[in-house]
Amino acid sequence: MKLRILTFNIQHCRSYIYRDEDRIDFDLFVDTIRCFDPDIVGLNEVRGEGTHPAYTAQAKYLAEKLGYHYYFYPALNIGGYGPYGNAILSKHPILNPEIIPIPDPVRDPNGKFYETRCVAKAEFALGGGLTVLVTHFGLNPDEAQNAADTVCAAIDNAKTPVILTGDFNLRPDNPLLDPIRQRMTDTEDYFRCPGLMSYPSDRPYEKIDYVFTSPSVKVEFATIPQMEVSDHRPLFAVVEIPD
Image (cartoon, rainbow, N blue to C red):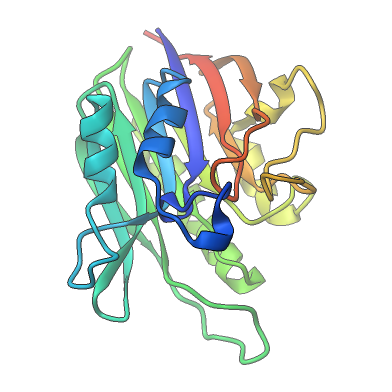
């Protein structure tokens, strides 16, 4: 069964085109996602409904406009009023959604901005079964180490083939990605144009967004389209999962 997979850090639907105005543009992101006609979408930096007016049910809005199923996975509650995390949108029913917390390290006072993160997990009755993991790694090495350990445990515990997506905040040569590469295939290997970058979207100089697949999943195509919507460019892949 062929599936179209999209990973996208949407920066809470803030338009990068009009970033100086701090403009939230839901329909821009709906139209962007729709143009790929994805079966499954992993989203990062998504706001949920909170007590602050800026925090609305973004995953629900996008999914309803697209006609998709959705699940929002909050990783933290910013200021006590704003749920924030990852989301999965899908043409297919989302089964057994689970929030897998990434443990917070002891914070280095000299480190970058620390933020509690999670892995979003969902199962799908597609082919012989499929597990999707969506994550967003922290900026500090100790956060990234905990995230990599958590992701690898989730891969090892999955009972079906896995597709892993997200913003890892790590370049491809970072050794923290090695345990994931030992378990999975990086769809970057199937870029028709090598060296594509994902961040920042206007003048990208690094690739930090990924779609990984279990070895039993066949990757047919992958790319990072040249588009300036969020501060990250999306990564799109076409894969075939086993029956």
